[in-house]
Amino acid sequence: MAINIGFTRCKNLMRLACCMIPWLAKCQCSRATGIWHQSLADSTVVSVKDRNNNVILILRGLSMKQVSQPDVMEAQVKHIKLDPVPDLSTPAVQRRKFALLLSFCGKGYHGMQKNEYFRSIENDLLGAMLAANLITEEEYKIPQLFYFQRVSRTDKGVSAARLLVSASLPGNVPNMKEEISKHLCDQIRVMATYRTTRAFNCKLWCDSRTYSYLCPTFAFAPFTEITREGYRMTPEVLKEVRRLLNMYKGTHNFHNFTSQIPQEARAIRNIIDIDCGKPFISDSLEWITIRIRGQSFVLHQIRKMIGLIMAISRGLADANFITEALTENYVNLPIAPALGLVLEEQHFDYYNKKFGSDGIHEPLKWDKSEKSIQKFREQYISASIVNTEIQEKSMLKWLTILHFHAYEIYSASSEIKDKNQLKEKHSQVKSPIWYAYRRLGYHRTLENSEDNNCDDDDDDDDDDVGHHQLLTDS
Image (cartoon, rainbow, N blue to C red; front, side, top):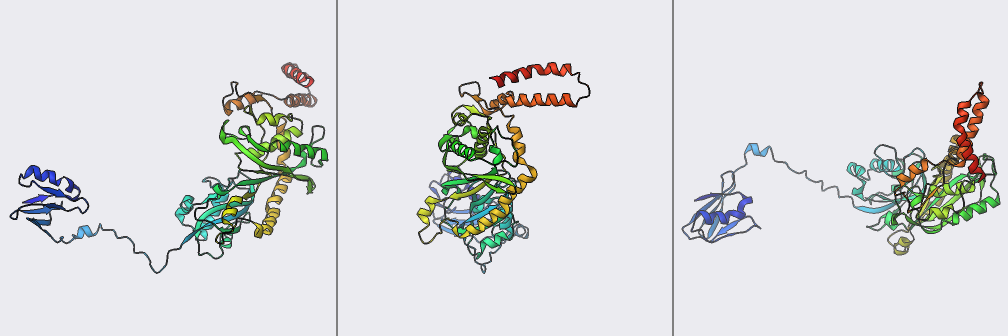
């Protein structure tokens, strides 16, 4: 008797045999080995065939004999695929967890994060790692494969004096810093490398971050002063700016200082320290640096914080407007230019306390590279900010737009439910400066016109002029 079976159907053989042959009453099947056994009489002979009708097993009573497999046909040999034999002469490279300290100038880059369509810092950095044979082509496309992580993302045009990234890289490269830097442009440099713990993640271990904002002092000029490049900040104005900045200290809800985040716990941030340095002159302009240290920041938070201080200093908003902006009410705030924003440093105090002195791992401190960092900062970051402002006058252009901004406060219990409605509501509001500029343009049109009979235009503008006078008188 012959029974045709497939190895995938051995499980159901007992049921099939019991239905077809009454005297095969006791059958057992072993799924682990793929071989089935039968307790049969000595005179019973059963042969087992595979799907190709080849006898692979003969059972005679309680004995079992395995039949040798037939030779493989030539047609079947063509479809056999063999795995390549690994080269055992070249040992596998053991990878270690490293932290890389970067300094870069963000001019001409679309931020830090890898971008498929625009030039970014990560695109150049990963390309340099690939050129240095530190990562594979697949890891270049998917950085998560070698546990690549950055501490912070930066906006378009924002620079960084000290930014840390972590990754799993080969541990047999003697001078990794130079190997990567030689494939980078002058705007990006690897300042130092550090051996870290195996599970190190620079974003999770970072305690706080420090940013700085470099801008001309005429951005804080009072409304009684003429905004010009020759402006010099007085001690009284500097004292007032520092007082306004101190109002940001502590834990607040910064939902009005960002976009795409409603009034939620995600917008709550802690400002550890904020200060304004002394003014200094560079290339005939007076500059000032604001330093802000916080546990973390949301999108556009720092630029909106500084933009609001500039608006208050110039008399466009009341000083209590900061307190209102930190409440649950909805406010549309101006955003300062990104040119002067620099990521200065990340702080790893808890990591250094736990692993920095264990004798195996290095503390994440930048003292040995401080001279190189300061030289790069002065040559590329600070020089780029100053030269770009002088040539493009981005701050002066932004200040002209700042006067058209309306500083309205909408209660959280009002009809404003999200920030899209707030933008629509804000676009309908006109500030007193708007009416003044419109009236000024109207008079200039009269002076340059050869025909002074502009009765139609005068009638159309009467309501606006009256409303402007009402606002200014009040």
